[in-house]
Image 1 (tube, rainbow, N blue to C red):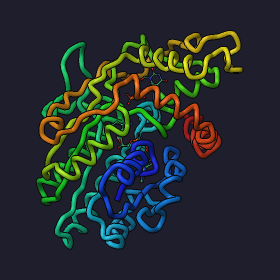
Image 2 (spheres, helix red, strand yellow; image 1 turned 180 degrees about the horizontal axis):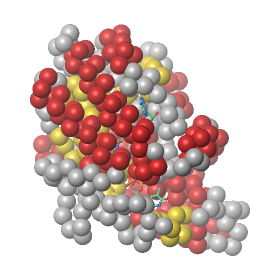
Image 3 (cartoon, protein in one colour; image 1 turned 180 degrees about the vertical axis):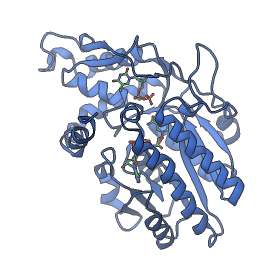
Length: 355
Ligand code: NAD
Ligand code: TYD
């Protein structure tokens, strides 16, 4: 059972498992379909496998009864928990949803997992987490699996809390649980609230590209299918109770990311051919704006452990990953339109306009 499988990483993971592994079983995608969940992210997989090897259940992870009955009905062997509220900016404006889904939701999933696992010989709970639980780095140093937690945004605090619950359920109730803490992902199907897809879409539409503060905050970027391959390896090989860091080993300042996107767009869709740009270049759209409150300065992952112990490595470097990503958004304008015309706008209106 993949929770949050209609979101960015979850949908890429489901596709990865069907297309790139020897998996012969069934996948249940359990998703509440919030503004960030889009069932269309898996149209290709539905066409091939719906109700034979791929099943969709619209449900909330906070709904214990529904989670438990799904585990029982489909005789689930593993939960891979992607379901979360995932955007830092949104957590600053509306922390409550983050507490509900990321903390309470993980708790209900764990409870249901413990009960269900009693009748199973093998059952695994894999929890997807973030490097943001470790806090913020100065100019040097890395996050290791042993780095103490020091979350600094409502989002990262809620993820840290869920990680602690997962570890507690392993130690206290013997649940076979594992955790992965990954750096920033990018690639196809990412919701355009995060830096990379938002920049690409704004640039294509000739809108301002916002860079927070001085643009020198650093993130460690990983192409999404490399995250998926690491999770798959962990499900197959990691021992119960283990945590692995996953990262791109690709630290970049935000301003460099934004400029790299502009330059990729200039070669794939030159500004002179884009009617929204008129006489401008893509880079002319960049604007430095007010900084995010409590903005973490630098994240950098040390992922030697998963490389050494499980033999994982990244397949994409930033230059081929960003080329694939920009191409995907250029070739999937219908997807962009479906997002923009959907519930997202209503949600923003309802929730943000009152703050
Ligand atoms: P996303 O926002 O694109 O997708 C989240 C999915 O969860 C959506 O389909 C949404 O409908 C679903 N969901 C939300 N609340 C739910 C609930 N209460 N019950 C059931 N489903 C619910 O997020 P993403 O970027 O794909 O991230 C997936 C996971 O990976 C999250 O746990 C996130 O913390 C973690 N993560 C993300 C990144 C990143 O760069 N995006 C990096 C490291 C870790
Ligand atoms: P984001 O994609 O929101 O991921 P996270 O906050 O989880 O790292 O942001 C990545 C970086 O880009 C972060 O330092 C904030 C910055 N940023 C901008 O400069 N402009 C933007 O419009 C957005 C969304 C983010």
